[in-house]
Image 1 (cartoon, rainbow, N blue to C red):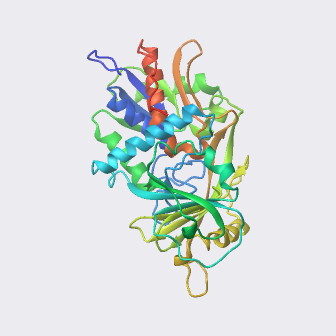
Image 2: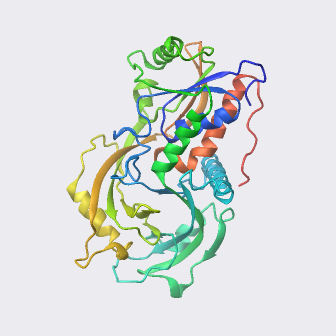
Image 3: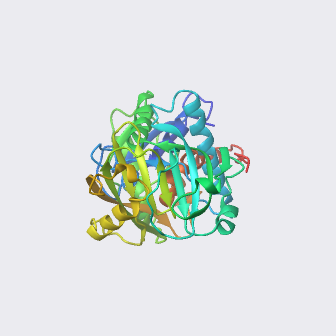
Amino acid sequence: MASTLEQPKHIVVLGAGITGLQTALHLQHSGYCVTIIAEHAPGDEDPLYASPCLNFSFHEKYGAGAQWRSHAQMHEKTQQRWDLETYQEWMDLVKGGEGGKAGLSVSLNVYLMFLSQKREKWNPPIVPITLYWSAPPSETLPKQWYIPHVSSLRTVPPSDLHLGTSSGLTFTTLCVNVPLHLSHLLSTFLSIPGSTLLKHRLPTSMHLAGALAAAAEMVDETAELERSPPDVFVNATGLGARELVPDEGVFPVKGQTVLVKGEAREARTRDGIRYVIPRTGSGTTVLGTTREVGVWDTTVSDQMTREILEGCKELAPELLDKDDTFEVLSVQCGLRPAREGGVRVEKEVVGGRWKVVHAYGHAGSGYQNAVGSAREVGTLIGEFFGGPARGEGAKL
């Protein structure tokens, strides 16, 4: 928690993607004075601004959609905790009637495992999300660490399996309308008196120490900001951390998506790479995706578009027209901010002067990590001021 003194501690968050925004809002609610400095923010179109790209975008003409679907492996206990804390908070928002304005909705999540890639015509079960794998259940089910924690979990009876699948699970999950969610986070942040978003590109020539000095000077020179110098910085710069820190372990994972007309009856994913995510109430659906590790080029690939469209036909047959094709509204690419060795959420004193908590490298897990990661950052900031270490958090 923040200091109980009259003058609250001042935290400057670098970056306004999902990690930066969720962290800034959490710190506000903890009593800190928070400033965000970012080159990009909700409403911007840039492939390097990963939060609204890929399978989501701020603007109506682009794809938008995400769901809670943990990517954490069995040994990644910290990310499991972050994912579970996010799941629980989002569920509480929806149950409390706040989900709509936050861009969240509850749906039933169905996991189905493929044994083959054979295509057949089928009538999909009436559930909001279905996910498929090629591997048999003996290889996939033991890896689903979240099974004891999600709501309404059940196995899919063999009679309900389609497309050559061998087994399946259903459970209640959450779908995110990303444009609404990012907008909600930012507007909620700015609605609190004293909150500020400064849109600037920080210099990287002198790396992190130089950038932090520039950020502190920027805050000091902004006339309307009547606040103390930064006490702690949060580095939520995503791919920017590669040059800013510098951290050569940061790398992009290019993704391409297609926005099509019509709302799929459910969200569906196969092998974690092909997916269909309806944008509730928008009349559109996002089809994806690709995972091109280390690729910085954000040019749209026509070949990838064809593969996505063809691969999603069996996942969303209700969106096909009489010619067995989708009506494409847009195609877009973005870069997920990944990191060798995984996410970096840790504190550091830079140049013997600047207190920093790093929060970057979430790759494609930024949304389902968001709440838990933000809480972790809050605890690390508190430790700078003599606060207690983080407890166990959500029970795994």
